[in-house]
Image (cartoon, rainbow, N blue to C red):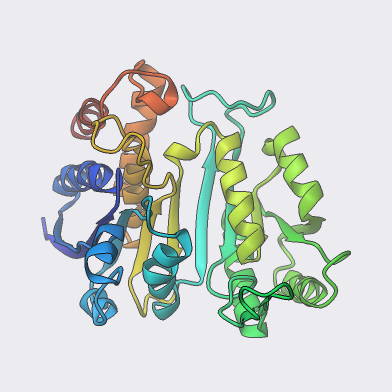
Length: 355
């Protein structure tokens, strides 16, 4: 068997981020042996701890150090004492933007053994949120004026470009083609007078390019309510940076727990490495106790395998952790159980190697 080698950049980050990446790597190595894949890992200590010690989340040449890796696995970023906008704009956003990771892909699925808090959310809940990841409401354009005075003000500009919107819509419609052929666009064009009508116009144009996809638009406020009331009606949801951010976290909670949710920051053209991260955060309250749920990071490993061109290996990883949840009562504390990070990981590794 010919061995395919991949070089992965690891950014454990803060808190439980350092605890969930080793399980993901262990699962990658285990499934790799079955499929002729070999992974090498370069770890980078870019974190809030580094910021407090050196004044920067990562070194000035940080992006160059990971530019030629095949993918990036990130644990979690954020820690008390460092403002969230500092950690985000000092690490995650530069990676996403400089590496043109304009797609944030969030799979939403109710896994057997993880009950949803929503009554109608059964096993038929299986959709994806496609979020525009580099422009929109999270632009760098704006500023503060008259700081400290009674008339202090802040201005933040939303930026929607035709190329930026068209490429995320093309990705979302193509994803819908591969799935059930249904797409919903999140909008708020009844209240946001410029950017959202522009977004809607480009959605209609995309719909003409993809006549085999059935699509509709829904206002964001109504859409979040419908996801809670009946999430099984959705297949692909596409939204701007802000709307996609909110929708994906809401949908993950509807699916059972934000603690197990994965996310992929994708450069679809593969000109740059893509980055994969669980979305549970650094969880300072449980960091260092060995009880963090590694499932989100392991699911990220599955998504990374698929992106790297190994769908069978990706499916085996997904099936392994899904099987553990469906056939055992092993649960970490966030899911109401007593299993440690190590214990849950060992069960997933066993399910991978027993195939």
